Structure formats: structure tokens, C-alpha cells
Length: 608
Image (cartoon, rainbow, N blue to C red; front, side, top):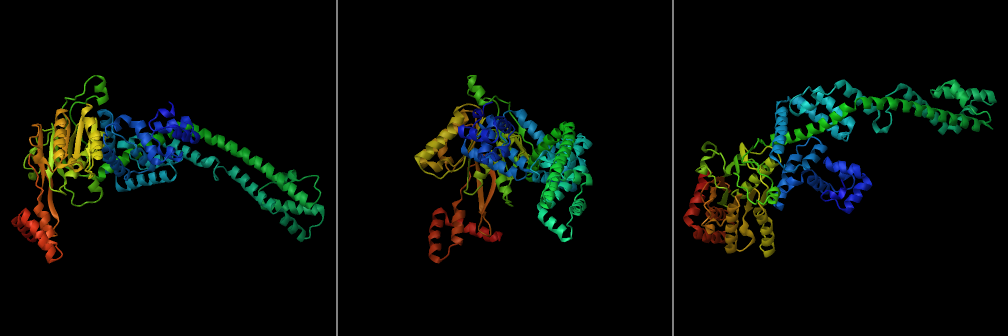
């Protein structure tokens, strides 16, 4: 395949990859999702990641229909990367994309959950053994030797459940021999300690080189000892070489020149000849040892390759398992018939998906808040479409179970958790689409072709309105299953127009048989809503003794939420810095209801 056929590989990127890697190696790196190789070749890591996501999961990336959906996807990957056991596993997590089929989702879920169960059941000592093995694997730059040593360490722990089954039947003896051979050849040379004869010859060569480097001092020393006669000088020199190097007398005499003009020429010639002969001996012995070691590696090649593959796969699955455990994630249930992708329907002339769809969560947690160690994270239960959430699973505060409406308008107080609920639903759907467990006690998800997630953007101009409509409307019009998660659309245009446009979006979502949640403060201006849509509300309940807003984040179904401005005004009255400031806020209290403000303050004092 030509490099330019991969998404994001233009002439400049191709030139960089070909120059550093060559075409074949570059293609292999892209097809295997090897972020490290591409980044070491000179590509920025972010650019390499983008290319690999498209190369390994291009269809899945099409689900992310808006920039906010893509941002949420990257935030989830960042959280998962924090639990990676190796850098290679972290890179592979960074290029995970939503799956193209439900079979792929189920397969990945099976693998991750098996890894989670295996990790959970491991004794603490075995967990430490595994993590230490992978730490050494990282430190050794994930070489073949590092992989074989990691596999041996995992075998030593005698773990054979879940992902560890991949190494359970590896031949330990073959791996040990392979590790010894790989270690001996590390760096392209035979390592010291591998072969006694090679070590002896290398030592002798080193000693001769030292003598040669100090030949003039050696001659002066011999002369200072009173050696003047040629024969006696030769004997003294011979004795010194034999004493300080591990060579034989025959080697020394064979190296002595017969035509030396003086002592300097004699000593220098002898040592040079010794160096030459010993260097040849080292090279011959190293070549013989290398052939033996390479033969051992070739004999164990199948086991080495299996170890490299298994160690990498185990690292990825363990990393994702640790992520699932860290956030108490569970397996989602996929509901609704598996529909063909939107592109397939379009080519067949169909633009609608009439299959049942749902998104429902029971006690779902927002991962962003959980990662920030927010102690007060309140789980929420919510549902759209043909779900099976029962009365026993819905908190009493919700007043009732959610209906089977596919579209909801979510209302309520500022800082009431509406945006957080949208983010939570987005996270659940994204994780399920990637074949990963989700942060909820139970979840039902219909995989979608387009996820339209739109955060609140407080930019009040025509350009923002146009760009927003261009991003959120086409996925609805293009066919396929779509999930709309839109936050305070009214923030980008005039209130009157906002209500009309938002009503149109809700109506279009209903007409296209899509799922959707629209957060707004304009619920009353949207009446009448289509019968297929409902209004849900989040309610503020008062102030804490510290005058913090108390909110029940669990939505009440079929009820408009209250913004309760009297709570905010009450806090301002209580926190006024002087008499004149308090008087100003008292005027506002009268406007929103002085009695309600006083009752709020009294309730806060009572809680204290």
C-alpha cells in the first residue's frame, strides 16, 4: 500500500517516514498502530496518533460528529492511559477507536472483563510481580529480551486465568535459553561472561593494548633495571609480557620481529603483532559464539514471537481492566437490532433507521468528576427510548420511572448538574462504542452512527450560530442512528430565535427517530413539544450551613426543573459585606420573593 493512501500522510510526512524508516517499515508501523516508531521517526506524537486512529479505526471515528464529541473521546482515553502498565500499552490505548460492529464491541468487552476478573482475583504479591515485570519491560525499551524476561516473570507467578492464558503454555525451558542467548547478544556484541575463552582472549588483548600504549615507559623501566645486553633485554621483555598478559610464550616469540633496528622498534613491533593476532582471535571466537547464540535464538523463534505478542496483549488488557476497576465500571447491554452503518444505508437508498433504540443508565457516575476525587459525586439514573429501567432502580426523588420517549428536554437550576448528566451519557455511549465497560451499575446502549455532543459555548454571534448548526444538523439529516446531546443552545443566539431554533432541533430529532437530550432554560417557550418528547427537571433544594447551593442531581421525569433564584439571592444577602450592599440585595430579594429568601436563610441556619 502506498503511504499517501493513509489518512493524514501527505508528501512531507511521507518524505519523513521514508527517510527514517523506509516504506515497508513505515507501513508496518501504521498497520500495527505503533505510535512510538512513528514519533521516533520525527512525527509529533499527536500527529502520529491521529494517523493511526484513522488507519486502524477510521469507520469508528466517523461516529464523533462534533468537536465536543471528539474532545470527550480524547478525555476518556487520557483517563484510561493513566492506568496503563507500559508505555506501549498507553500508546495502543491512545489509538483505540469506537468499534465498527457490535461483534467487535462484545469481543473487546469479553477480553477486558476477563482481565478485570483475573486481576481482581490475584493476590497482592502476584499483582506486584506482574507490575514489576512490566516496569522492567518498559525500562528495557520493550525489546525482545525484555518481552521474554517479562513472560518468564509472569510464568513464575503461575497465573493462568483471563489474559494470562496466552503465556500459560509457553515452553519455559525454551524461553530461558532464548533469554540467555538474547541477553548474550544484547547490543550486537557478545556480552562479557557468555564464553570463557572469548573473555580470556579479550582480556589478553586489553592487557597487550595497555602495554603498547605505554611502550616507551616499559623500555625505560627495563633499562633502569640494568638490562643492556640484547639477549637479556629480550628475555626481560618476554617475562614482563607473560607476567602482565594472558598470552603464551609461543605467541610472544611468534610476534617478535626479526629485523628490529633498536629496542623501541623491537618492543613496538612485538606488541603490534600481538595486538593483530589477538584481535583476529577475538573476532574468530566472537563469530563462532555468535553463530551458536543465533542458532539458539532461531530454534526458539516461535516461542519468542509468542512471548512478544502475549506480553503486549496482556499489557493492553490489564491496562483497560485497571481502568475499569478504578471507576467501578460494568458491562453495558447492547439493545436494538444491529443496523448497517449510515454509509451503507445511503448507498441502498435508505435514510432512516426504524429500529428500536435506547440509552439508559442506572446509578451512572461522571468519570471527569470521579477522576478529580470529587467526594460528593451523586450517581444518576436516566433513560431514553425503549429501556428496561424499573421502578426499583429509580431513586425516589425522580418521582416516577422515565417513559420510553426518545427525546428529552432537561431543565433546572444553574450548577444543577445538567451539563454533567450530558457528559455522563456521552461517556457511557463512547465507552460502550469502544467495547469498554461503563461507569454505571447498569446500562443499556444502542450503538449509534453519529454522536452529536455540543457543550455550552458562550459566544453570541452569527458565525458561531452558523457553525453550530452546520455541525449538529447534518448528522440528523444524513440518516443512521444519531444521539443528540446539546447543552444550552440558547447561549449562542437571541432568546426568541433560540427558542424557535431549539424547538426545530427537538422536532427534527423526533422526526428522524434519533435519541436526544437538550439542556435548556427555555422549556416553557418550547411548548407545545412533539408528543414523543418529554421535559425532565433538576431541582435545587436550598442552601447548606456554608451557604452552598444544595442540589438533587437526580432528574425528575416529566417535570420542569426550578431555577430557584431565591437561593442565590439568599446567599448574596447573607454574604453582603456592608449595610449598603445588603440593602441592594434586599431589593432583589423583594423582587424574587422576600418571604422565600427569608425561609431559605432560616432553613440554612436550621441545618447548621
